[in-house]
Length: 271
Image (cartoon, rainbow, N blue to C red; front, side):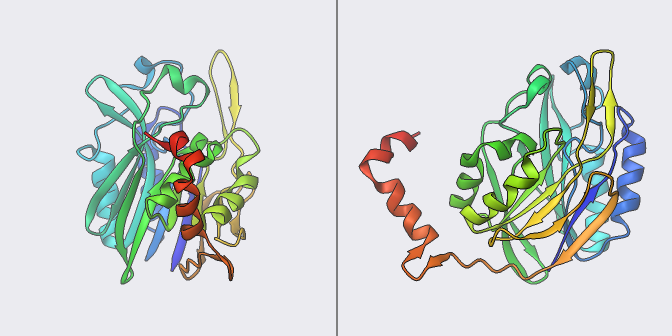
């Protein structure tokens, strides 16, 4: 199975140009699961909701969802992309998922980073989606950028049945590419982190994005690791094989079930 990332430099506040860039990149790819960066259509550096609300769009009824649906159908792709989602007067930092069958679902970022708290509403629930691709039934969980910092997010996606975590990102801190093999290992799943490159600036600050998109295996392997200047579509081929045995005495799901049933932990994880 082909797993891919699009690492590129979205143009700040130029939605139409970003549509064109994304379309040109994706039309070069066939028969793949592909992850795009966070906020792929708008760029990242915003100070307030008012600055981005006119650039945001509805999901799934907006033009970007329709564009990705058409590309996915034409080239047999499963696409996960970050987007600024407008819902009435609210804006969410979201990711949407489409396949050749059309729109599958969306996730709204829970853990907002830095000044995102001035711009976006917080999401409220995690999502794992059922996807049929290349005659395989897969479960894809989605998290966005800073969500990686909280191990509970990827663990909960695992408990919800995820085999792959798609991870659109706009990373500026250096730690995530080093942590993702561990997230993959400790949850026995595949992770696909698509980060952007380039810089954005306003009157108050400049942000430099680190690139370094990674695809990681359940054995903590880097199946793909880009640098901060790579730009384009990058792919690897792998079989999606999940072996939950850690030793002949330890199976991850079985041990997790016992762990969460312990009286000492039960109250800590009760919701």
